[in-house]
Image 1: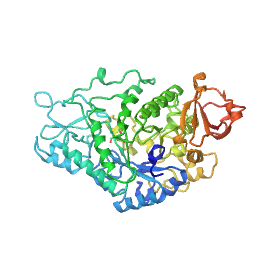
Image 2: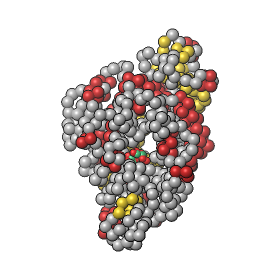
Image 3: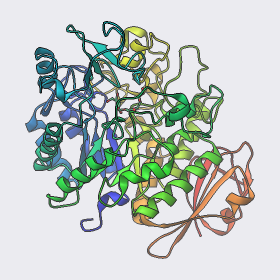
Image 4: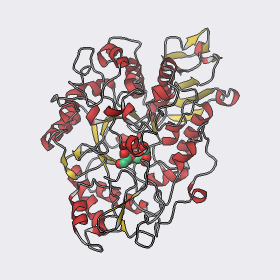
Length: 557
Ligand code: TEU
């Protein structure tokens, strides 16, 4: 698809390397495992693979704490393993996107070690956010910022200075006012571009530039008003833009990187991870001279709620059209509760950041039914779709992991109040036979019993499986080029408040009606009788001209 900006309608599969496939039996997935399973991804029908970080790291935040941006962590392999994986992917026609973590390094990075070893005011300190504390002896942190993982965002070192870390204390924030940082990241980009990567996923892409003077966080100023809130009052928080997020100056970085990518032949892309609202603010990151895509988390947090999904779709298409960028559609990632479980909670819009120890257990059957229905929405919308490894199996969250197995710093920093994200990061079940269900022996996180009957092998052999639903959806999506189709809401969406219905007109002039029932009762859809049913989210989706609750259909008109 060269010359057509492949990423505009690409389906991009997120590999979480430590949990995908272990090729050397050390309990942790690796690049060899990815290479081994590339044919699986090809068969599934995706266009590209995004790999979460595999760089040298002490793994305090599962690799989002990078000690060396140009070295592969030995747990995951070598640069040769990377080359092999990339070459094989390209031979299969799959693009490769790697993760870039520019907001912070690991405390083990040589720069941070040098900063600790150098005096206050030295150029080594100036690469990070060191400040003197408040109070008589500087014993109070420089401001009131909190770490996103819980606890304070400042830690104090021996000589009394404090350093900023928006995440774990092992992840010191870089100082993007320092030109040396700009130079280094240009060089890191070129290092991987020279090695043939097709794109980068930018971690905490809205965080590198902090507000002038590092003012205190103020709820009155920094909370985005008026977003829907679940019964725990949670959703509003996702759109906290803070004095540390979404500062106008951050766009200079994307303009700079856009130029770096343009030095290279082929169509390379940046996708930014920015948990911000409203949609208009997010669209600024995908202006023609910045990044190519931004994750659409409004769609993710909309849950299985008709009105919120509808608004998220309308807003995203509108703001992206204005800047000429494709919308993206995301249901889950390694930071959120897997949607097959989230959709099984009593709130349709349950906040995605973790099921608490005291919380209700999800209704697995309900969650799975809705996950299948949501997949047919996600994979039919125009633009680019992200599939997190295991989405295609309908994997549930592991909600009963014991404390000893957990590794996510959010669990520790909140003293267990938040269970954290490990439940969404459990190694994939490939086959029913022993050895970590085909992942490899002694997986770094134990798999729940429920994985035993939903392995890839089981699902390949069952025409009704989630895996085959994904394969069918991706095949039709490609054949009809749905990702580039014209979108319009079907009038049904005005008349009926539980139906999400839209029409897609393809380049070859076909029209597909997508109808999802996010209500509680079956609804009559006349086109079920007059049109051709292309795909249904389940065997009981359609009965007597009616679309059952929690189901989606694709109908060719
Ligand atoms: O996440 C950034 C982020 O802002 C949210 O995902 C959220 O704050 C977090 O999940 C709260 O628990 C990115 C990565 O996706 C995540 O895995 C890393 O831990 C984080 O950055 C730090 O690098």
